[in-house]
Image 1 (spheres, rainbow, N blue to C red):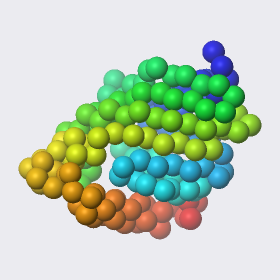
Image 2: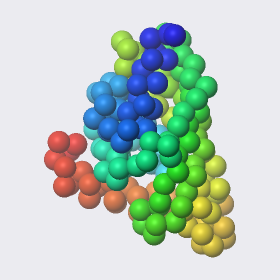
Image 3: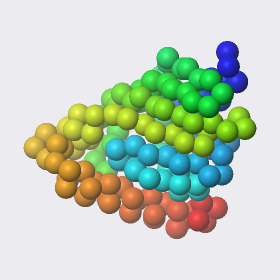
Length: 160
């Protein structure tokens, strides 16, 4: 196993175990994270997102990963998570493909890709079915979740 594959495996094992501190230890301080819901997070904001998501302990059987690949510079994995959307409690089963970049044994860039419309249908029900395809709706959801992250950071100054 390539050492960067081990970093990815450590990251997702920590995710399975609801351990954001161990996840964030895999990140370089200058980490850049992006996904369709939380685009363009950098540094401590990216780490705060995982801490916020990790606040609610999850059943490790509801989080899994596979197809881990990496070399000296880049890596990838597939991961899935089942959870209740925190704004309304609706069940979500998200399927994500992740791309990574590495430097000195740490993740410097992490990009998750998933179908936003499919995610919004699960997370938001009929509203997601009707509006989830709309880029304006996506930006409204991103803003709402960014505000939730801002509130988390305000309550956890170690991420400020």
